[in-house]
Image 1 (cartoon, rainbow, N blue to C red):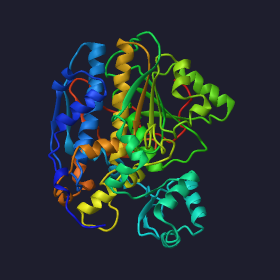
Image 2: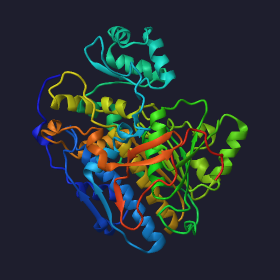
Image 3: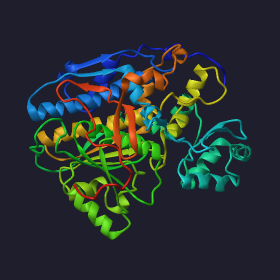
Image 4: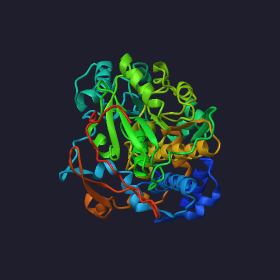
Length: 475
């Protein structure tokens, strides 16, 4: 890798208001609401050559504004929405800042996760946080569970060959590419044909008014089934809960989870467990679906279709459903069915290479937060609320689709920040004014507050985080 500064053509001054306008249009929303938004602060707010602060502020603002528009639809009252960039950037790193009984969380990353040089001199990133992914990589490499053994074993592989072998085995590994290489890759080209997100009508249903609840927040009375794990999908559910939705997290006892992320993203939710391979649990989810407004899922594309809970089946079972799907690489292209996580998509699609170039580093350099995960989560929430508004006014069942790769393409289009990497990082001590303290099912929780400030319906979490499976499987 050659050392170089950011290409002059890539240097821009991101305009958060213009970026928000573009996202708002992608959501199919009217411009009139944009006059109710206040955005403060500017990039850089964290050490990065990318406009990560702008991405955080704009995606959180889009979700806040979508909530505000639902409030207007239900109450005929307008309100202001304000988002500070520094606060938004902190919320995009919420899993770093939360504390339980004053103590930081256990290490999220497995000890062999990360980047390695291969025998052809190129780099790969391994994601081994789930035991079956870790064990699969070790079996493929025929090595021990330590970084030295993994590094030595990868010297026998070319990066892209190992990427393909891992994908064929159902594992999660990507080779590092530059932006140019990603743009020439068939999946990179497929992603470029897609919008930031899509909201598609997938079934007929009459217009449906939202529940006649005692209104205090935009999503009061709205029921959400949250079938997601890790960060992006759970952030969507957490955001909907912050605006009043009744969010029921549905996990499975046989599926792995990452404990610290469960605590941070579980705020505002109830939590139950179902094994959809079991007939009784399958029937239970079908029963829940009939009284659900929003169904959020982040499983591999096609995974829930095989179990009878894909978008078409859900729309047939529950006309008027808002079905939200998250994928890693989008729903078209040769990688549409591949598993993936934020760090892997950053590596595959050019961000780690570009950030390393800006830092004059020979090694891959990640962005200062899981920005694709968090941005995708808020975009999912914004899409869900925008589709819900359409159900009220137009009727129909709707499918909202978001992917990490499409979100990355948007981040790239926001431009670069010259000298952004020289910005000081923000540790726990620097975000004390952005934290709140509450009891939870894990102990006393200290966590980042929601950055979207709504003047009439302040966002907050009415329920504490609880261990998986704490609650009954019912509304």
